[in-house]
Length: 243
Ligand SMILES: [Fe+2]
Image (tube, rainbow, N blue to C red; front, side):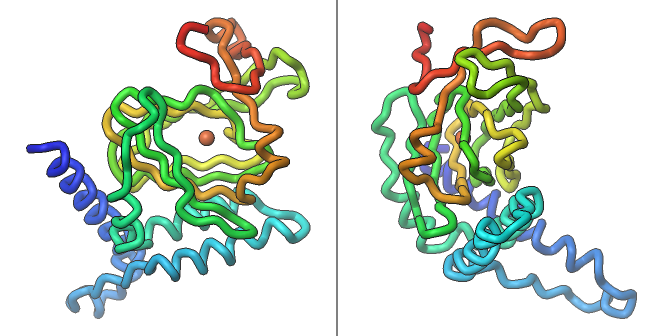
């Protein structure tokens, strides 16, 4: 199977998986009388409907008491019932070019006042080292491939040049699965693809000049210590493989 065929096969498999997931709540809610009738698959959200839903969910950031956990859960649920094999996504995927060598391609698909959608495309082995998303929520939805996501919470004063990080469980994201973060939970993370991987990331708020000025990378200074903490050096740019 060629690489193109393989990617098409994976995409189709992901679509079938998503459609099956979208059916589960319907099947669970069937009455006994309805169980004999064939269940019609609920229509998947179109791209425009997905944007409208994300707009609605992301606007809550401008209201007092923004519940970020609830927001990322709802964004993930919307992605699960969206048609990500639509023309808009397929056209965007078709323009993918591996031009960065050893770093995934990160392309903005859509941006507005309250959120942005980015697409991440990893060649096998490509990785994004430990970094943060200051003040943001994020939902990284795996469309195809396999990516290992290691997430951490800061442990101590985040203004320190050296920062201890407390690890969260590592997640292996596969098609149909999402990894979420909030401003205070799992905001620092790294990603490493095991094979060609394509993810859609929903960030709220979108990147701004202020947010970008507060973005940092974290270079590990060793392994986890006896307390299970990782000491890192805070940097403005990604550490190279030799550092
Ligand atoms: Fe990230």
